[in-house]
Image 1: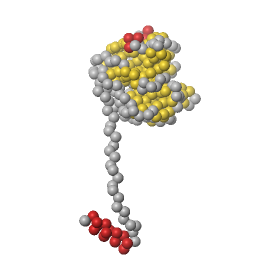
Image 2 (image 1 turned 135 degrees about the vertical axis):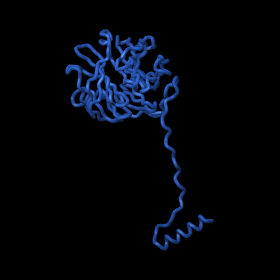
Image 3 (image 1 turned 90 degrees about the horizontal axis):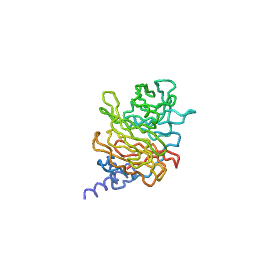
Image 4 (image 1 turned 90 degrees about the vertical axis):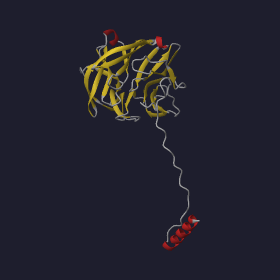
Length: 290
């Protein structure tokens, strides 16, 4: 009853004051925010329901991200030549960063940036000898040389890729050694008191693959994704592995995005909510979400 009286009075006021007629409508329903992404329990691979979203044409490779700075680092062909570049995550534009090197003749590629965006690891090549170099951010768009990771001469000639480091205090790093077109090693390094040492090595054959390349490592060091080829199939696919603790070995590999081939440069966000990758068949970078 009070609602009818209120509307009648309000309609009378409208007429008296020359206002627009009052229209009674129900309030719009409140749509709750989407639930935040959460990684599945260890032992379960993340799944992605979102259709792939293209965000960058194929002028960059070896993509990695800092969710803290909301920036990406990659090896890009910009400004007339290949260089390590930085830009916003999932943006098309990337810009070269200044990097002070151990030696001016060092050639840098395959970069990977830490989650806080302050540490950069990259493959360094000088006169045919390769290594993994560590750089620390020295400015908004600059990195300074810190050290080279200790690798044997035999391994140094085979280095192909490095992952981003996991978080301190006991950081981990994954590197791949390319022995042939059908054989590679996956090596895990551990940092303690600023010293990196090898803690685990697996051959691609022991994992059931022909090649294991382009590893990515989660900030907690418990999840990894690699690009792989199978002995009977040369198409590159993405496989996920995890483990319960840093001291444990990674578990059985599970394929991600099983309907897509020719995939490279995987990057998984810390909450497992989004997977970035380069699709060589389509010539672009994409991401998919939960």
